[in-house]
Length: 390
Picture 1 (cartoon, one colour):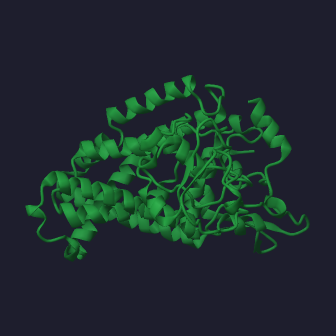
Picture 2 (picture 1 turned 90 degrees about the vertical axis):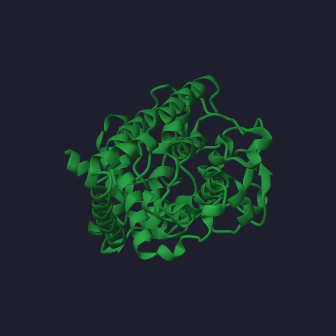
Picture 3 (picture 1 turned 30 degrees about the vertical axis):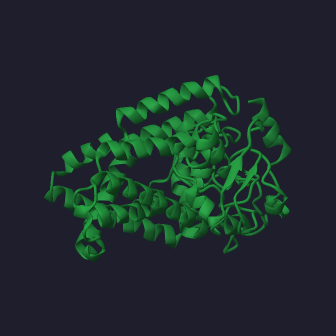
């Protein structure tokens, strides 16, 4: 089998409905194609804006200095060491998930960071050009430190809204599902993301910056610090941050968001938990509870933990190409794909949480239990046994 065959013809996933005698095929997904075309237009706008100001090379270097700063790389390395010393879930150093997410980190630095930089510049240029009315008057009389704090808090709220949209709307979940497919969560999972998944967050987070900071922008060090705070919660450590964890997203708090067994749409916060609390979507962990399993229940995204996945480099390409393709059976999209791209994690009934609560790492409480139905019930016993052996 060639790499192209592996990318375009992946093995059936757990939970797929296969009619056997019906003609199988694939078709391109229009929503994802439109998202990709829109991103190319934004790249054109952002590149032009950089060329008119500091120059494309200088602008990309500045973006890399913010998003892949030595401070962020050092934090990632330190947390990786802590994961070996105090793991929430003990596993081999070169576990398939670690190696795969390391590959995503390399891809993130080499290709995704320039894309994200141009994306941010494009949104800022478009907002300042066509929505100058949103710049708040009188901000020059406000102390700069206060303005910066308010802007950062509102940026985090904007990222929360983007994250909520990714779990609510089908076209956005298509590209966000890759991030949730990791069954061996680690600090490197922060970089396991489809490039198109950055579009809603960068757009919404640019709004408060333009509105409050105008042409002054944010200090690069503050952006780097915010990126570091958003990276830490993916760490494979049991830290809940004690009382501080009621305000700041901790690894234990965010792990519940990635839980394979829990209801969808909880603990969406990036840095602050306040948005989850206000929306009634916060579930705080309790100490000494076992770490919950993470990933997608039906493995609707190809993952490296599948049999042969460790030896198959085409899986990464398949994960990036997956949102563009619908697998069809006899002219109809397969059942797994209808669930997969319905704007929710497969097999989970939507129930709006009523209030913030404290729960164990694997216990989401009887009120919000989400029973699996039919082929989406749980992963097979073989999958679970194989994972435990690793």
